[in-house]
Amino acid sequence: MNQTQISHIESGRFGISEQRLRRLAGLFECDDSQLVDALVDMAAPRSKDWWEEYRGVLPPQALDLAELEHHASYLRAFEVVHIPGVLQTEEHARAASLFVEPNLPAEDREAGISFRMRRRQVLDSGTPYDVIIHEAALRMRVGGSEVTRTQLEHLLQASGRKSLTLRVIPFTADGFAGAGFPMQYVGGVVPQLDTVQIDTTHGAEFIDAAARLNRYRTLFASIDKAALPQDASLDLIRRTAQEL
Image (cartoon, rainbow, N blue to C red; front, top):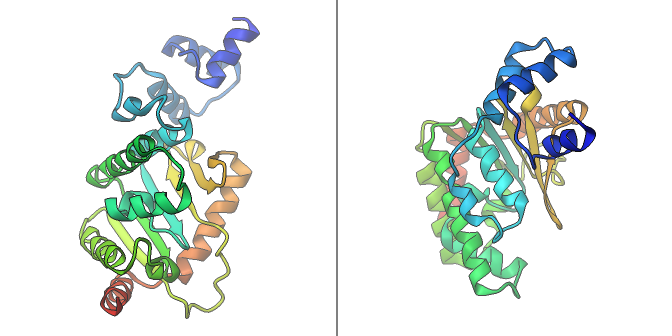
């Protein structure tokens, strides 16, 4: 293989056969059989999945996120002032989009909302999903009081799923200082394939370097300690909805 071929494979422009991938793993002295098997499974030819319908319509990072969620062994999400995308109602998603991107063409906006609603499929897949939301996100009146109340009721309904754990960090939590770190942790088949996704003003950013992943694991552990148990969290969501 020449350098150009290797570059195309590394960037995902070209596929790679199982035989060649295992040969490369041997040449690179990778003796982790679980990692190699996971890479082989990732490289296997697949029929087009639902997110491919949006290729050329939405940014590539959006499609990458949907693919990561689809293949995740588990998911963890933390949000400070937003409701996680897969838990948003259509009305909430539309109101948020109108605020953030008021000049977006209607066709593009509806494509983005449709895409976000289809990402909900991960909730039906049974993939363990641990969500922690700060109380601030519950009190943001996105789209007005009625839309916000409906959104909170939707969270309560979604909490009945066995695969979903929903918890809240209240304003009264002592020592919490993670307001600058909304993120999603996507567990891979093996830990080396874990990925952290964070939102930025220029789109989604994906982090998979081992050292940085360790930092985010530590951060998630601290956030976890600050959150209320699920029952207390759901009570807080109910009280907040009743106040609207």
